[in-house]
Image (cartoon, rainbow, N blue to C red):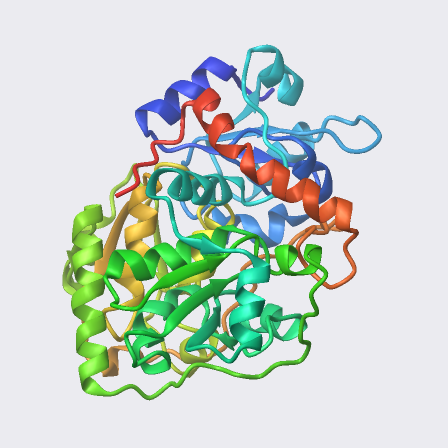
Length: 415
């Protein structure tokens, strides 16, 4: 018999910032149709391979809910799996998803909702500058003094990109922008597929104080397609990997300033154990590129490129209230990533610079976003999404700030 926790119990934990993992056991597609803000999707089919990585502490408070397509309650089977893996504090959400709704709990659509709603809040509060697809196309076609930087993963960029765009995944922007736009008069445009990563990327450059005019491509490649404009496919332009000392030094100073304003703390490798406590979960992430991680990384650190970590925080860190420590080898990408996680209400630290020899482990990163059998097809991925689906997705994003206000558990604070 699995103990139950009510909507009020879960909400009290979230408001008090006590550790809790609210787990939706359904496959990703039904999860995307409706779930609480801080629910993390861990399908029943993925518990055995993924639970230890995603919920590392066995005495974490875990709350389960979910039914399959046939209406079968998944909690008993899931609770047995968690118990077999050694987890000791597994509970059922009283009334399940319907009980959450009936108790007045807000329900959200889509995936990575904490990050996407946070991005909308950033734009709402900071008035992040943006340009329409038509305005950006006119700049590109007119060969204006402009660079377009694509903040998504490289594989997403290759699938479809804005003409002339260069791949600069989110955490790389502050580190590499001065090499790509050395003239302070150059207009910098940041894009993603929809809105979140372009908003966060643009605001990162604004927060860091780069001298260039900066703007997001409003609504990303979705906006480009809805305007009837043509996207490139198979592009291979990437930011330079070798940077001048002056560029690196300026980026370090900029990143440290942003992180300090956000309340990020630094910690030495030798003191890392001080963040470990019997009742606290500690996630360790290397925010550099997957290729850099594979070539050598710190023992015990998982690969989570910074832009994607901010975009998919709920997947990487399903235990709300946990601690996070980030590492890089340049003192730019980790503090910039940490600045955003801190604004999202996470207890986050940056590892102080360590000797290069400490990056001793090699090997490709493991799976960071495995899903079950029913993957949710994002309206912004690929090149064949119907226009009405893309527009509906944008309309949904525009309403997220109001949903955050009704939910009231987010602890977001925009600097």
